[in-house]
Length: 352
Image (cartoon, rainbow, N blue to C red; front, side, top):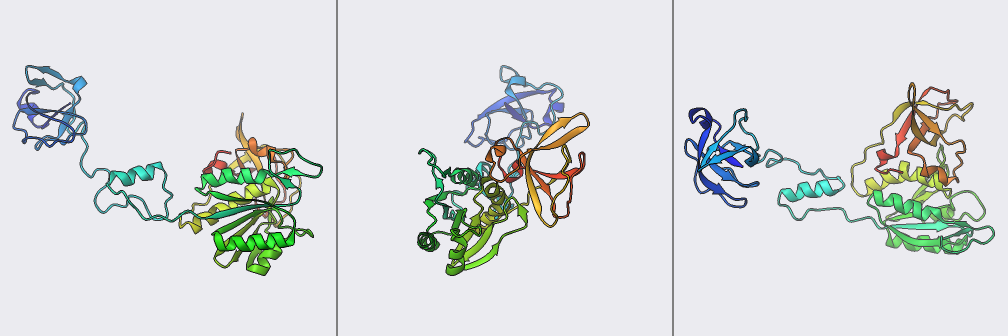
């Protein structure tokens, strides 16, 4: 385009003499004189005395004389040094997860190295004689390990890389020795299954013997068997074996825990009150329940829909759900049309 002093337009009948060219990466040769303009390229430094730029496609030039059309505003098509970030401004606050936008903002200041938290070393262990990995044919009494793949996908959204330890058999010595070894090599031990009260659920006993069990069994559904503990410096998080329960407890407990351990900021998910498009005759009090659901448009406005079958082992419902329907501890029933809380999965930075 063409750079000039806006004040010179009135005294020169919108006609200015072009006296220099300024390329990006090069400084102007001299200040602009009265009635002068400079041909300037995108990204170049404006010459002294210039405060406005006319885009080249709007310019009329005849023999080094620029004709500036009426209506251009003072300061048009210019960027001021420091208009985005000034010296002393905070570019990225401590505890912020570095996404593409943050990396770009840091780079624009000229900084090429910053102090970051090292990634957590997280071990994931599946448990159970009946559990096998996909890829082999099921035998009688066996089930595929969906939790590893489910949680690995969720972990990526949180910037966590899981170290796959595999599937442990329901053997007390194997469970004890594996967890003890992981406590020396990892920051977090994440297990799925083996945290109930069965005769072969050895995970809780291992934590109690090797370290401290801070919490076990919480008043939510699904997800009651959630366990939290510690062995020396390693944090233990025992998720339920049922996949929907594992999914829920990851969102509600694992994600804020990982944020805290990484020194990151955590914003609780926003709840949105939306009319129920269903009814529930009776719900147990003293327990918070989470149903899989989605929003549908109805004649009177958006309504929440839920799955008819909401068992914690029915993972197929997660593929259609867009969020969690939250029923508080005080809720005893739900009437059609009643406002209830909905937490979109997007509040956890996931889409499904």
